[in-house]
Image 1 (cartoon, helix red, strand yellow):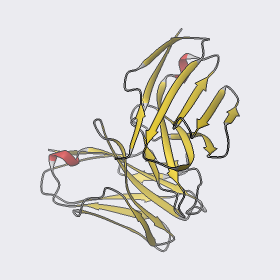
Image 2 (cartoon, chains in turn red, brown):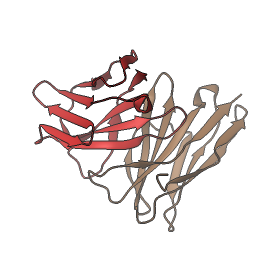
Image 3 (tube, one colour):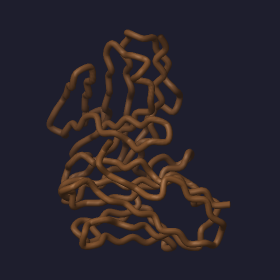
Image 4 (tube, chains in turn red, cyan):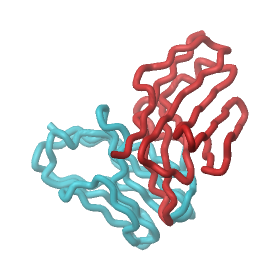
Length: 113
Length: 113
């Protein structure tokens, strides 16, 4: 069966360190992968999109990698700040005409000062 | 602010009742998506509409239905409510029906007692 796995345990790191979150998937052939940030009780906010033919994408302090052989995406936040504390969701989109996304359950990141 | 609006913010109702959730997409967006988010299930895709037409269906129960109107706003109708329907319901919108970013609204928190 299809599965998207993100670490269910919260990731605790110190301010200034690099946070690395993992998204693994099975039985999917995603054409693209997106990362979203979600704060408690609020809607997800889009961060980055990476396509199947791209290995890496960067935006300011954020970096995403996509390895279709390993079936894995890594999401990095460098120089993390307490304001980065949130839940981060990965979402897969397969190659169809319709942009339906399948979301992982997310990983909570806690950045302490 | 994503530009997507949802009403109401909170809804408390009883089992067996019917409710309607409303969503207005961002200006210019033609696709509307509905998601359900509960603690144990994560963000689950329910249904997508594009320019008034149903485009994709996810894990939407038969008791639930949706439509998109000519002005592109959408409504999600939930009937014969059960305790397990208590969740956050999000609407998202995107420009087309392809591989774009989805912009999420603030959600409607439904509590069924």
